[in-house]
Image (tube, rainbow, N blue to C red; front, side, top):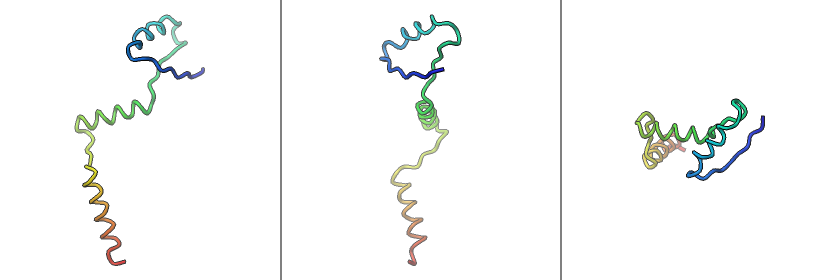
Amino acid sequence: MQVLTLEIEDDFVDKFKQVLDTFPSGKVSLKKDKLEVEIQNRIQDIDNGKEVLTPYNQGMDEMLNRIQNKYADS
């Protein structure tokens, strides 16, 4: 089997899927990009509150404090 990447305008996707449906069953399949799926899942987790994020400044402050505590006597 070969993999082809097509870029299809959003307003034409439904029509393109109709064309694909005319091919024999099992000969053509649509797959989403794994990275795109992973990003969408993470965005949903963030939006749903399942994934808790640390604000950038807070994370940087915590990291700076850990470094200062570790190397304070150096």
